[in-house]
Image (tube, rainbow, N blue to C red):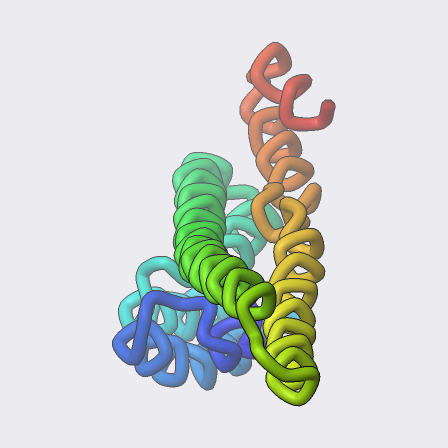
Length: 190
């Protein structure tokens, strides 16, 4: 998973961020070695990246590609399966974090609405126009906060992060095809 996701607090905490920071330099070295077709060097660096962060899905994906291009399909298959599992786990962590944030907003919205309801009762009992104006201004401020929460909640549609990227299925299908597992490869391509 890319660095920006972890930097924005989508991960489960400091431990995952630390693991990612330890894994990233090894992953970057692996990418360079892979681009030079030095698959052994790439796999050595990927082993280090995965050791630092076992759930680093892109490291597993690159490992699968490296084994695949080396025609070592029996090693490529478990690597792509680990990549897919790691991706889904991360998507689950991100979805959980997003859900928790959404739950907190829902509680905050209810609290704001309760305050508005109380203020509306106070408004009806206000003795002066000045008191009614003050109460109405406060109600307007609270309503804006509710509107902001509603807009944020509406933008919380399911994201592409939850869907496995097509590249994973494509690589998985290619590996299965090379292993002559045609019936298993077809759903990956679909």
